[in-house]
Image (cartoon, rainbow, N blue to C red; front, top):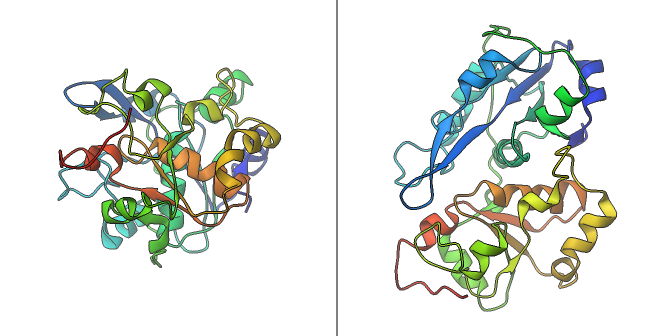
Length: 281
């Protein structure tokens, strides 16, 4: 299965019994240090792609024991969430959201991390689907019997603070997926201004077209990342809480073919917990 599928492809395959469609959107609202995250089940309930289900990243796919939101869950928790959605080893999964695709790429990265490969992001997501006047559904459709999901971890896809600290010697390229204002310190959304020392800035939002929410052409994406990929070093992406970072990571791996890419799951939310950790502006 290709990692990026079109709305036309999804419409043609939408009734396939092995195909599971998940909406992944979360609402982020300014509050305190960073943002307050709220599920968007109600929005999905009112209007959604036919045969889709809503997956709750804030609760079902985040470790409830972690002080940080969106921390990777345990294997058991993730498997139970997938099984409740009817996902088994022989399923195919298409992911979409209503924002700029980063919620869909987060769940895509999670599925890959837990060893599931038959998954794809819907190019353009909800924005393109409705702009093309494709069919929509309403209400809560109970579509699937419970699945059987087995995890096979790929630990190299996620890195810890310790590994990020080690990368600051130049062993890897750090990439900050937050806005230029976050990167240079003029926007202090996470309590400490600036970025992790040595990080380059590739704003995740700029990887998709602002109108269609489709990913930019491959040639443009290659140019955006050229100074990073030319180093031939391993790449670590980060952001505020491990969400936007997966958009950069998705482009690098799924669209540009770079294998040695990892996401710093705790990202700035974890980094700034220790005031002794350096920041750069």
